[in-house]
Amino acid sequence: MRCGIGVTREAGAEPGRPAPAAPARDGRAGPLGVAARALIGVEVRRLRAAVPPGDTVLDIGAGAGLGARALARHGVRVIAVEPDPAEAARLRAWAPAGVTVRVGGVPEALGHREADGALMWHVLEHVADPAEALRAVAAALRPGAPLLVAVPNPVGVEARLFGGRWHGWEPARHRWHIAPGVLHDLMREAGFAHVDVAVRGGWVHPASLAFSLLPALDGQVAGSGSGRRALGLLWTLALAPLALGARVGGGGAQVVGWGRAPGGPEG
Image 1 (spheres, rainbow, N blue to C red):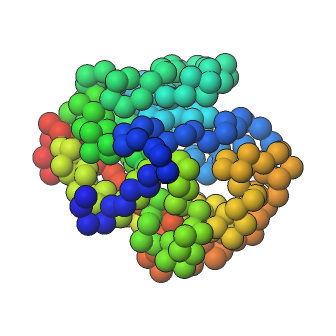
Image 2: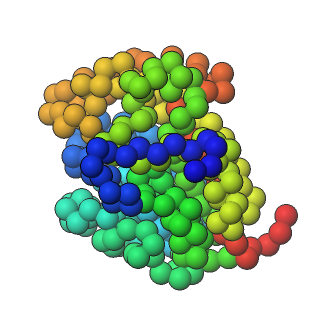
Image 3: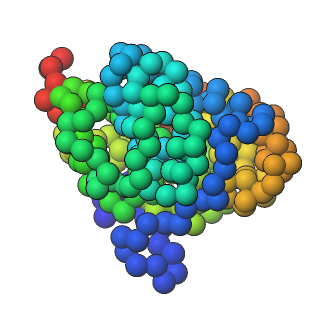
């Protein structure tokens, strides 16, 4: 194992077996859904700006489809790849025009040179082999196509402050814990060029701080009801200024990577 990457193994779990999925949530519902849609719209803006309308983007690990929806509103065609059949069925039932849902994981659900961009938003920490997953994504992209990827930041201020209570560990679901330098190296080793990795957090990712303090309000992990999820949203918004302070200090709660698939123009 390289320096800067950690691994979680459940008691009795076999290496390579996927971590259990979180309880599914409806990405459209209530104030939480409104906030989540606004949040992902901000998070994917760089990818949205780099892919012209009419082109095709892979949303890998699409979940409730918030990223797919934000991209489809821009006019791109989206292939939403989701390994959980039940989650994929829910997404298919309400997916907007321009979104195709594909059931499967990485690499088996990806074609060769089929897309003009890809989104992997908090996906790498779940897969059996992050290096293999990135190589598969590189092969699925046309030369020079952009990839936007995010993972929790295991060396940020929150991780150091909360230790084992940090929300980003999520040992029931997160297999890997990838430091910024390691994400950069993994993307480069997979063939991506013009790789840019930055620490992010603050107002665009305050939930990590909020649910480290009060994990019972995190409906994704605890399976809370709609009322508790609403309380979790209010709590998250209240702590956004503190999370922003962590970001300004260079210790934000997530690591965001950007790169271009192999074979594109130099420079």
